[in-house]
Length: 194
Image 1 (spheres, rainbow, N blue to C red):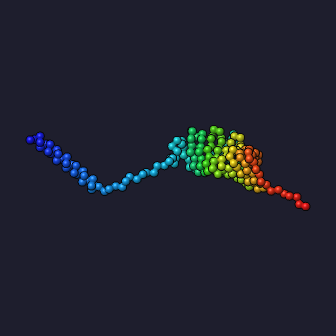
Image 2: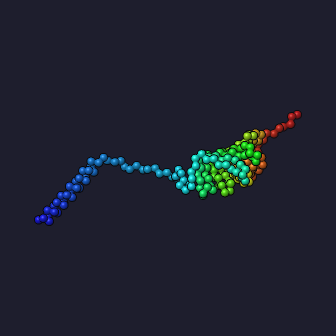
Image 3: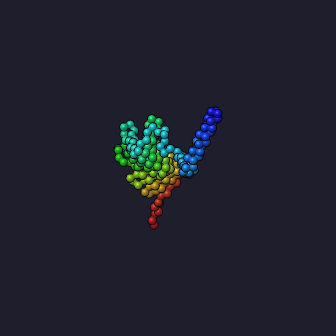
């Protein structure tokens, strides 16, 4: 009989626990279906960057002579400082005498410190004080050769003419300019008066 009482007590306790569980579940407020959490397609800050810098300023020098100043809104440093990924790029060029020689702006760029080479991309514009304006989707500034070049389309506006084409090579002052392909120019022509 003692065995039967234990089994009965066990059944009653189990039934009471089950009823309490059902009552507590009924008393809980109903929750909405779980909402989906938006997951970013890519990280806002790349996790492989060695360093992140906001408001960066880099002096571009060649054998101790300043060739320019490279400013950016933000910069990601990779490969122990040898590759810099820049956003909102603003570069000021200097002549060999240290005079202001021109300004280049771009949406982004990559500067390789080992090669002293800046590749600017996205609405690249080079302007000079004499009124010359060069625009291209991509442009490379090779500091060691003191040369800018691209294989992309470009437009060079001067006060008295306009050049277009695919690819060019030039110095940052745009004085030794050489178009590579599909070169076209528009310039006013003076007709002789009678």
